[in-house]
Amino acid sequence: MQNKDWPNIAGLVAGGKADIAFIGATMTLGCVTPSAYHKAPAVFRKSLKRISTYDLEAGFDLEGTSVRDYGDIDCTHLSPAEGLVPIVEAFRPLTQDHGLAVLIGGHNGVTRAGVTALDPNLQNVGLLTLDAHFDLRTTKDGSANGNPVRCLLEDGLPGAHIVQIGIAPFANSRTMHQTALDAGITVYTMADCRKNGVEQTVATGLQYLSEKCDVIYVDFDIDVIERALSPGAPGGRAGGFTPLEFFAATRLIGSHKKVKAVDLCEFDPDLDVSDITALIAGRWFAELLMGYHSR
Ligand SMILES: [Mn+2]
Image 1 (cartoon, rainbow, N blue to C red):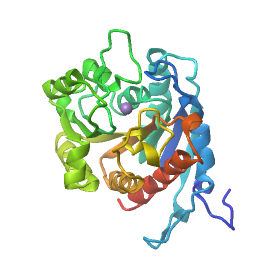
Image 2: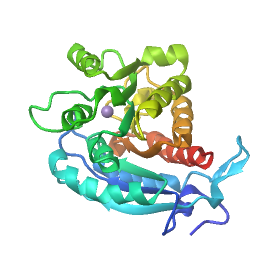
Image 3: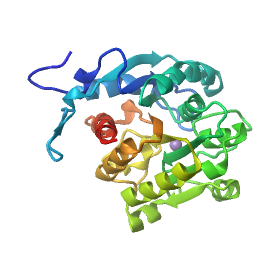
Image 4: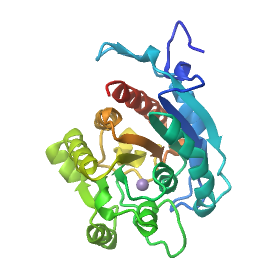
């Protein structure tokens, strides 16, 4: 039900054949730094109430957009390996029944499930990550939040179908970098983004993937944002994207016809200060809706 005095994004939630649907995945076990990622979906929903439907800069109101909320997949007590199938099974219908399916993590382990839900054989999907990290840690101790991209490579996703944007210095190992290059992953560092602009870099990545793949999945790891401007992400460091760069990239991604599913992950509400990252998450969703509307 929409609030007439304060039309907001949460008020767009309705049932039925909405253009955009989201579901939470409270995955929190199996992370490099123990965190309260399971709390993020609830905080995300709360923040949507504080985001107006009206973009005054664009002169456009999202009031006519419908959103469906499928609730949460409770995987708080499941390891990433145990959570894989439940998330794939719950998220796949969203990718089939809606124009854009959104997975709210949880840690970055949800990305493996999200990509698999969109394309179970992993041959037609492209993966774009906005992330300070490669997420290519070894899988010798099983899946975790530090290795979803490595898991996907091992599951059969071609490295040539992966573009990683925002990879940060002193936040990844030489081995990870070499793994990415050996796999044929396209890598854009933070410095590349500074030089060419975040939006332009994302546009280049989307163009590359759209020539190779039928559908595109985008992983928004919120730790790609500058830590001082978004404290609610354990992996965030100094030198990341500004929130405005993140929003512009999100709108562009939302506007791309081949982008069928996305996730937002690595938000730990317990680390947040003054709801900074919570409100970034809420506006991120509004930016996706604005992008989607322009398709
Ligand atoms: Mn990540």
